[in-house]
Image 1: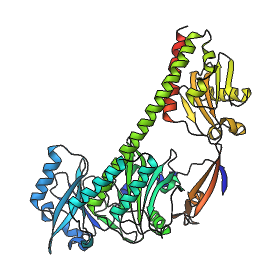
Image 2 (image 1 turned 60 degrees about the horizontal axis):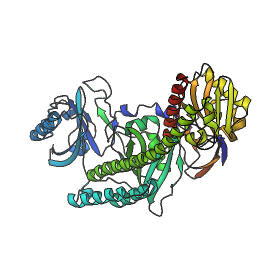
Image 3 (image 1 turned 45 degrees about the horizontal axis):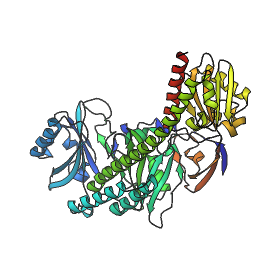
Length: 509
């Protein structure tokens, strides 16, 4: 156990690695790069010999029609041009090989100057079953999710049903916080799998570069961590004279450090599907398997649908909560407006009996500095400490509503009154004159259980040439101090509305 202030566990180093320019793919599929017109193959993965029976150098600069039926190519061009589709286009192709045609799942990516086709050879034992049966299963899961009463129930239904549908040994719903640390909020697992429910994982486990890539890919699949990657030949894309951007490719290879990470977790196969809300990464559906596993393309597509339903349900719950909170805040705001305009000194209405500013801003303490006069209510730092905060805000030129739940991380010396002011909400009236409304929240000491020591998340070899992930995921406790309950988005909106009302009241004098 360690007692500490809340830390930033993200990694600038890991987040700066260009994962999309690795020039390597996983070998369970082939990547073809063609000219923009989908006529000539200009780049190919070197594993073509193993999967197609044709070496890469024999495929380069050949017509695409030599390996994909011309009728299929015409269909691809038609799909891409009819509605000017720019995103990934799923395909079912019959691939021409020396020993006969092979059915495959494929995905087309249209770039400005070239096109890419990912081709996956589905193992015979994983061939698709009855489409109607799969469709009915997915519809059942989607219906069950829509009946969930809260996010906890939603998450448990999702992981339980996804595990049943996919057969993964462990399925988790993993949510990011504002610092990009993740928490497992729901889990379904085999009895011999390590439990991770409610454990936290540092932001460096999914660094910025990887998080950004999840916004462009519907899932990240690693069927077997023990793969040998395949290069693209030639190394540089002949069309762009640069590395081919593999951001959207599901075949994109995996950094050695992540392979080591999976090994340390005793996981051989993994798959993660992003949950995206308001165009931002909210979390992941994360799946693990003890042995190699290649889920059907249809199953992976079902994950996308289920992820969308999860996102929709979470947004609906957030909207319901927002409307409920907004209705409450609007009622209190209206009462305070009446008091502001009824009093000669409009500030008096803020400190009258309930409802007052404490109620409106959901704060434990309120301080208002206006024209050199300081008034407080509730639990606040001492007057001289508040004045120091105001001087700091003036130096920082804080002109907009601002909030923090970790003031001691930002303002030196504020740790001494953390018990009353770890959280600070700032409503500037005039920062030049030092006129501010401040809301305070007390320290809430938290005990956080991590999956492994987050301080050992990255370890470098003595010569600095190679780095490694932590090798233990045993529960590690951290007691976090100098942190308050977070200020929610609806409270910040209420604060902005209050600021507007106060400025209008001042102008009316």
